[in-house]
Image (cartoon, rainbow, N blue to C red; front, side, top):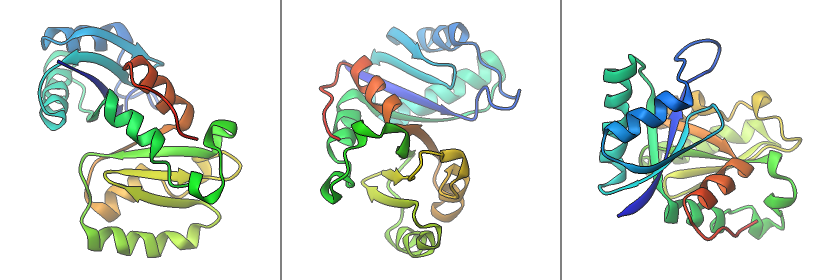
Length: 190
């Protein structure tokens, strides 16, 4: 039995794909998962169960479509993987302390590890968005957005999806920490 964290992309934004958190919890429970909890209205759900993260994501996306008529991308990590994300923040090596400035740091969770050549091309292209910086660690893109205004950066989900060809959803550093804690993961890093 594992603890999973599912992050839905594009719900409750601009009046479309409306999903109430009690409805989301009901969908997850109907799929046989237990200990279901949600965090804020942007589609973060923590639950226990078994299976591969990609399988769990597919089941949840299908459940949302079937039960709520909502088409939303879903990216899933285990609680352990979220703790690893916190520990692996590449900006710490540069002397940054993300926990001291959480609004300036974000993680874009990708549905899979991107192709090496596509990432290399993106990394070169992304240099034009300095001082905003992105770094890939496995299937997670760590972002440093000085000033903390994610809404102003060009390094957003649509950019990563277009350049890498994989589904992406982003959470701020505080949310990553809260979700890891909800998943019972040891939270450190930053």
